[in-house]
Image (cartoon, rainbow, N blue to C red; front, side, top):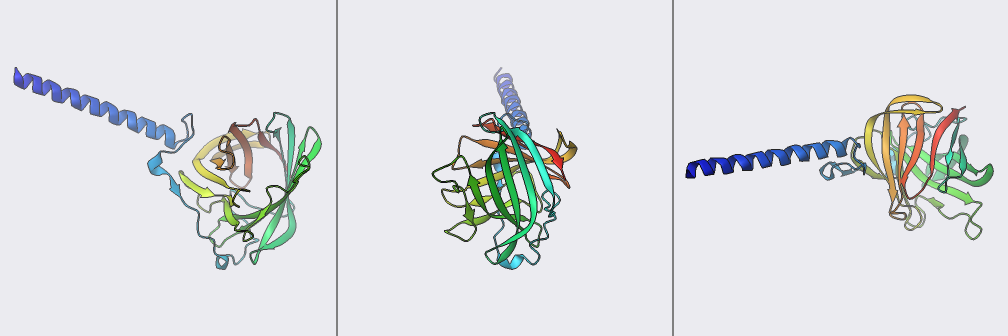
Length: 256
């Protein structure tokens, strides 16, 4: 009788452990692929990989040909969607021929102009450079918000000025779970991004794409706002969607 009870107890414990392992693996798989509700990567897989910024690693910084974020001067990308309050929005991104030197590095100037309900609301000049490994760095921005009468240039920053540091807009080799700084100017711009997946199928007005990168973006300055962005091979940013804290979202509708 005693041996029977021991065998039954051991069998029961083994069954419980097996169920726990299966449940754990199922949860991990769901999180890693970004299927879960919170779109998180298993904690054990999260890495922080913001390469060290070194001006000696930029021998041809204006040659920005990262396949997920190439910047060819003269290209104009138009997006449509809604702003944070749900109003109709049009966003026009122009890759200019202009350059700006930041920390001794020539950067490409990209103009981003936003219209809400047909009215000009904001215009920004962003500065980008690509290092020798293919990482695309975000070197700063000069923004003008026409709705902000007190401080229309709020949010502007430049790497190397007042402690601000360059961040990454796109990794040379994106991998699921990597979290990196996109920009850092304390109290002004503190955006980060995490790569959630590399194999999404996404359709926007401009076309349908496979093997699309999906990232999650967040900031300590806006802890209640979480955004996802989608990047297609040889096109770049094709879709942006705020999951919480705002109604903002845009999709690519035209490229010239």
